[in-house]
Image 1 (tube, rainbow, N blue to C red):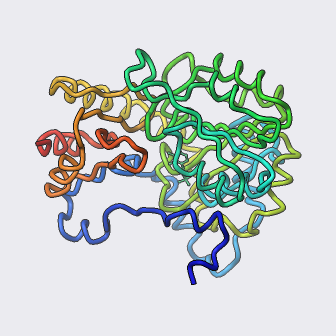
Image 2: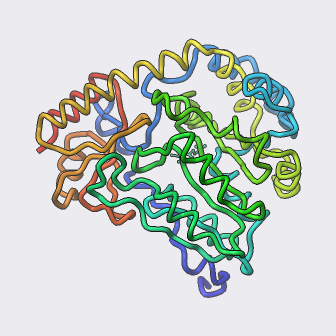
Length: 364
Ligand SMILES: *Cc1c(COP(=O)(O)O)cnc(C)c1O
């Protein structure tokens, strides 16, 4: 029966969930250090939890199909029109929807080698032609494995409908500056949508990088996506958003499932957005802890790539599979990178000091 799947789907494999986390939580209990999924170890804002409790009695009702209250709060927060925002069941859903709405077998989609794993999947789901652009070299002085924007701009063909780029990028942690991104947008044709995935934007502290949102008035072909899964610590609820020129959002709205964001998620995201202190605390905690963890790993002779995110990519300079297995046996989950062709690397989320300490102790 699998041969009945369409050509694009036949070429794909199902999402690899990695380890069976529910079973591991039972086995290791509180000492399990989950450093594989870039979750915010501080947990959500208490205000988000209270909002979920308040919304619970109404779960027999359908959620607001427009997400009006969350959009209004986001519009104020981001200084855009609410009509410029689409909500998604995580930003993953929006990245997929954008390809489904705008690309098909007659056009191509550009993304970088070592770009976010969802980009090739979204391309395949739309049946479009993937153009994977080589990343910067491993030994690049400032952004090893990062997006090479000049090469990406040069790879755009007349039939290229979408360019996906994550800034900062997962799994590399690397980023491009505001100036470099604007130069890229200036080169991209108006008929090519540039999707900038800012899943980690709230963690950024490099003054050269702010957000692509400020370029929206100038570039109607720009779409910025963000998520409540990372800094806002609501990964389990699945809420993301896209911001763009109103016409692009209206197209996405045609294919969006009407009740794609559930009522608890809408309430929690709105409350989390209102707790600026919690986000600020998460950011400063992450900065300090990432610096400490990086220093500890470097002291062990390991190369740690630069990061503006809540994870680091660590180069073990040899097959990292046995290292990942040894960590796993001691209840420390890291993310293997073999699927990206980076078998010597592990991606490690910044955890609490206790979790990071357990990681360091468990390293063979
Ligand atoms: C985690 C992540 C997302 C967010 O996914 P959600 O579906 O919103 O949970 C999007 N892009 C990148 C690059 C990510 O790392």
